[in-house]
Length: 140
Image (cartoon, rainbow, N blue to C red; front, top):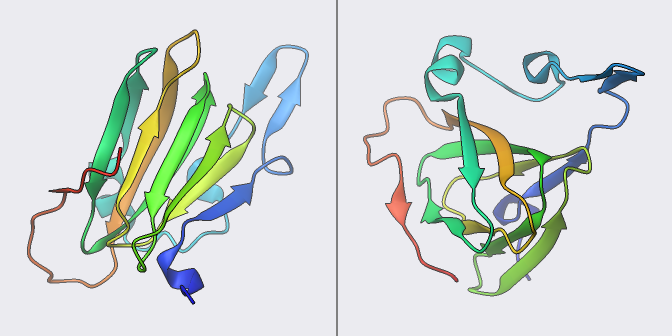
């Protein structure tokens, strides 16, 4: 049986997002997640777009935990567990944070009609581990 440590976590952010008639605001670095070294976090923080019909990812981070937050568009998040089993979950800007443990192959496929945008960042699980930071791991 696969362990929970080898599956992503899906965190509902509904209670952390502030929304009113003007729109919404979310402060990811105030979240109650183990963020560790803030300077390393800021170095890895990035915005990603996935055009309709395209796939991003198909990789893993051997020594880093990764956070993903889709805030526009929709697509399928696909990952492979430690038993080699593929899993899939729909992400649709639905206020869900994905936390991916180190070594989990993952990808994001945009089959929606609009550009998918997400925020991403990653942090090392073990300090002093050598790169590579990202290793190709095609799963789709």
